[in-house]
Image (tube, rainbow, N blue to C red; front, side, top):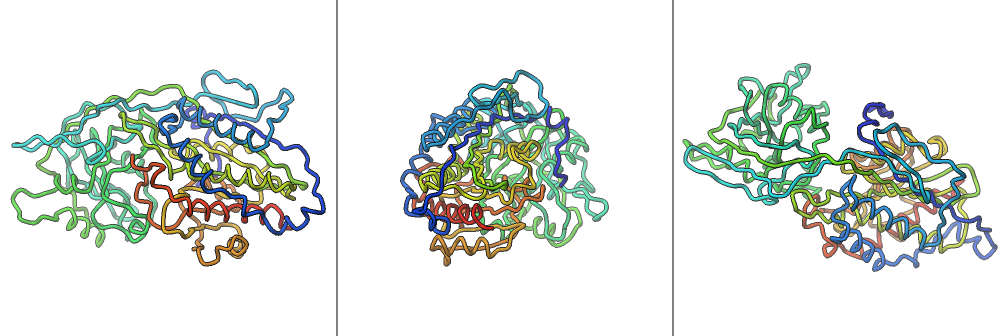
Length: 511
């Protein structure tokens, strides 16, 4: 992927609130000489981290949807926590951090910069109904389906046509639309792709394929046959919160439906075979031949989506070092908000990562010494909307990217099996392993290479070494309304925070 961002995309989607926090110069005394090699891990307070998660995931912030007043207030809360830890706002000397072109008003005050970003708002009481010639079955919001949250307004009734994985790639001899007519229909496609298809394909690609062929709307579902990676992640058949990542003028209405509902849609009334969807998916996984079929079901989709002016918010804070180089510690703060009246608290995803970087900042400040490399903390917004906040930072970095020696990203830090999943790019894995030894976590690390998703991705694409830290094991409430603070394990928070503190200490002070 190209590391830059087109000016047209920036004009349409980007905004930033940047709060630069600079510590006064701190002299390194003799009593702190050993602290360069040994971080004060004992100052980590998992109950304080959990308290921060409870605050961020409470109804007070309504799920922190990017571009809303709730997310802006959460950004201000994070900024205040930086101040309470002992950080200071800088004197901006009449200057501002660079922001991209935008449409609308912008301003700067008290170190805060804002600009407008279009924000989709899905109104309450959406409707999805599945019909046969004899029955009408209203689907249940949350359990049976969730509208795609940036989906256009819908008022559609049409026949459902199953189109496999919904992939079209003549170069790979695959066309899931072969043999079926989908014009003025609603297509149903499976998420992901078969193993034999090696090219990348996104959800947005699949929606474009459907729209180009005249489909009025789409349904998407997780197939009953899961890839081993999906099993390790704890993927289920439930619908999940999701943005389609297409401009409104290129999108068509869509919903993520449960595997069970997809199986009902594909059930053959003239056959005793109960697992038709599984059989079709098996055939798709074994061959590039299309398995697309019209069904005898109709779907009715009705909801209203409006686009409002909002603010994408990043919060930045700095602990200055003695040298010219930098490291970054980041976590996204945004989640899905309250679409269609359903609250998505986002405790594990990613109030947990946000709370961890706050605690690491407190611990580093409390240690009382200056690192060799300055440490930039970033609370990103827009991660759930195609990494908008981190892509924005890469397009306008506060410090030159060549001077940024590493970026640590924390995501999903409060649920799992007690182990840590650590992805390393651009650095020797021994660096990550050594931090585990320092933190006393040798037996809890699983080290991997590049992770395909998260706010570290734009940094990796820009050539910045990255380390991604995720609590290991299954995250059963991923992108669900059940992702609440009472599902968080303080012991896991303590493990993540200790590791990130040790890693940051090491990267900030190595030669």
